[in-house]
Length: 433
Image 1: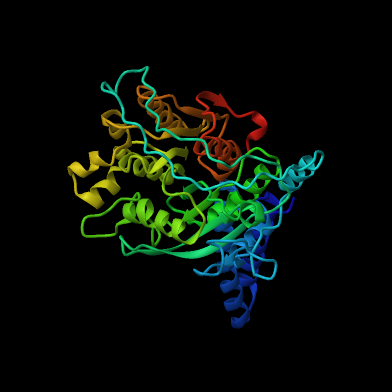
Image 2: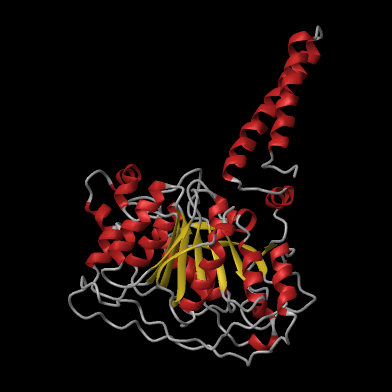
């Protein structure tokens, strides 16, 4: 296949660069030399970017590359257009991503049987998490936060969700950043007009941006496929930008600086609850991420106990001391705030219920595997944990794409109050990139 990650495409770029160098050295015309030099520089730049993309397999098709560049399938959202209550009518502008082959297959499977219409679910108030008993370090203590069942269920459907791009204004942090919200198909169905939905907040890595969840990892299509197949019920997915510029600060509140923690843990949930039919922040919210975003998710959920019922992390790290250079830059070397933002310390020292954890690592990356296994050992002194291993997986988008379907299934069943998967499991070899 002649795609962005194919060796054939890289070969064409190399051949083009060589031809331009030939004209640059052999031509007698100054204008031709100058033109060949400029184009050769451009081709070399494209080759460098393509080589990086070939290794990470971020954009595997021309369609995903073009969609990312053009913002295809995304609607610009403004408050008050009708998403917060009621149902969006057919005459209103809503965006939907074209279904991928996996979504089409899942949709055709669901059509073999009759599609049931669920009873109209009702919103409710979740009870506060139960307090822990003493001796939190006992290995037999199940310290998970209490998550009551909700009145939503997984039913096969044939709809598609909508993706909105919006500005998330931080009333407390003073930060406003771009983000995306995925609304499930049921959000727009009359039977669900009075329903409030659970939420998962996904945090990208560093470097990275929130658009990666849409165009690189295809979260909307994966959500549609899982909902269509009846594997999960409806939930809202919010994907905020975690930092400005080229690099972030591990989602921390910097003294006299950016309040990224406050923005992600308080402002983003407040914006989503205000503008959409989302359940209040608490046990029916999950937070997750990949790489640095995995650290952010674990740290924020443990620092703000009771605000999230579950944490999901792909190839994350779980010690503040694994990124000490950033910690020292944000807080100052030797600051006690570093320990206060160390998930491994927060787990063992907590005196209240923990969120439930799902973590994943690829066996092809020793650093990620050691970090995940060490954190699993720490968490299991307090509660069971679900640890997923991807055979041969590396710290790249193909591994995260393979892990996302089980991540989304586990998240839905957990924050909807269903049975919780625990233990260690391995994805099938066919799940690899």
